[in-house]
Length: 135
Image (tube, rainbow, N blue to C red; front, side, top):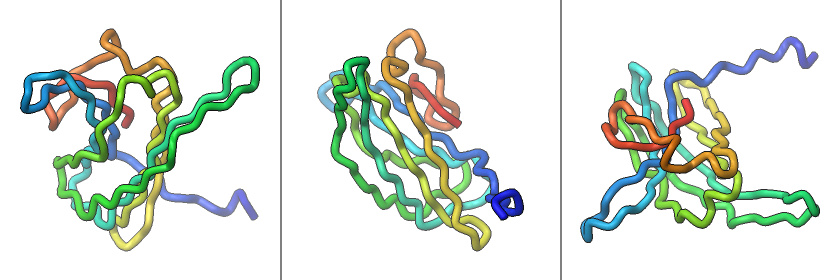
């Protein structure tokens, strides 16, 4: 029965959208995955997409992108992808899957439309940069 299925909880993995400067000193936004666990996670895969359905029922979608990150050590991070500001008006979803202790785990991280903005920026631990994070 459904009540007997207890999927393991995903903890100590975060996705952050970070504002930073590139080599030309221009501001850009990048999406990172951060491993706050005490162990390495392996075979990390991330799918990303943006979507929104407005009040008139008109749907806007981005392409679904797939990213193979590989292994991520304890208290380490990896860039998932750069992100353009014009998709901040959409819900931006990152579905993270990985192996840990012989089990496959996954979790969706959804940045709701209009939540990635200057007034919501915080300092992201491990990265030590300003951004918006879901843990």
